[in-house]
Image (tube, rainbow over all chains, first blue to last red; front, side, top):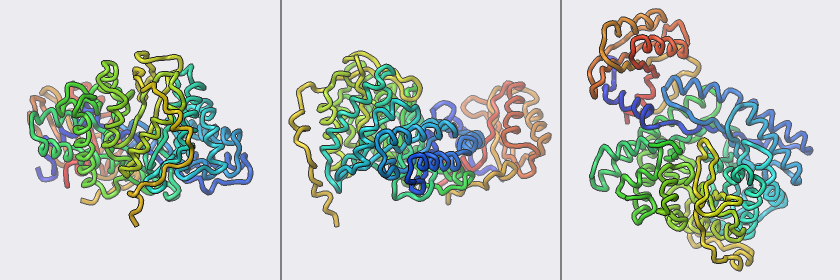
Length: 456
Length: 102
């Protein structure tokens, strides 16, 4: 075979990865700077924002469909990330911020992307006037729009934790749940509270186009829990070193596929390529579960003892394989454990095999945080704030990104279900500790930056 | 191997890999080759074997002189595949290069 440089086995492996193991490109996310859209009127700003987003992203869906067909890889989502709105909204009050959110929503509809992220503020050290207005506008903005995602960065290793902002977000998460209560509190599925947020994450709901980024970028989020699961199953009872090697090699292939798609999309859109985020991101579909990988590593159920160690192995091996595959690995890059989006997690939560405490431990060793977790609708704002504070502390001390995306299920309690449909999935409401943290949250101020910050 | 993007907007450029999987029967090669010939696509290599109990044929084709778009070619191959009761995939070769070579 003079021309054919690959074996039949390799070709079939690629095809099987797609056809039976749910290998896909989870998202192509176009990042767009809105810094040049600023205007002294809200009308002007909205017009500039709409025009720029429409112009830059108008070919995204078509290019994405072409590439998907030509490489034989499904591309599940097309998304947009914009400059944190707090940086471009000047002196806007809440009403103007709502209009900006609606403009972003209209633009997203016009170019047919499923989410547009960046209704965001970065308040690690403290809040400006516009930050405070944006915070206050979040619940209404998420209730009034379909495709807009919001995020706030309330702490970092360098700055410490802004406990005032954390207290405020406890209330805002509750308000967002209340305003969208009739729709399973779906507003909360579009709102992420970060510590150590990254500026180039292509996944929603936390994507935004950070101010350190260029005019535009094309970032890619790959995925493939099913591919990793099959590879581990095929290996049988090998030792940890061999297991890590198998995961690394699989992550390599997945990342290479993602980078090819990303570079091709960037070239065809005439935009610079940014990064590949090589996160294993599950979907509710069977065979597309990170929890099942952990169980295949050797647990009767995700959530039992050993889950944190297994996840640490997986997260690290994924990163090592991906780092070899591409020069520009970024975003979150690891393993995601969103509860409602993972069939194995959903089942474990239903059985009571996994609790919020175990999930919190697992966030110390993986890419994200407490993600897509439904909690009782009557959970007090202070408790939500304290959960955020715990998660942020893990991120701050360990110099990693952590985040919280909690869904207070209005009118529901432990054992009831919320169902968003589609990729956002469904989840049973799980219990939180009902003993109060209100005195902690009432103190106010900042938790100082840790010694880990003094690296100069 | 540096991960280069293929030339943008070039459905007529580069090589692709066709994979035909199914049960063996008379006329598969002829049927697929006819579709390719009608589209002015040259076959560079054919490899055929039984891999994991499927009859599998892998063709390397050259899209340089293709008379139709990738999308159209893909549709025609899918239709012929359905007629022959085999599954036909066509993918640009870069995806295999990217995934299986350091």
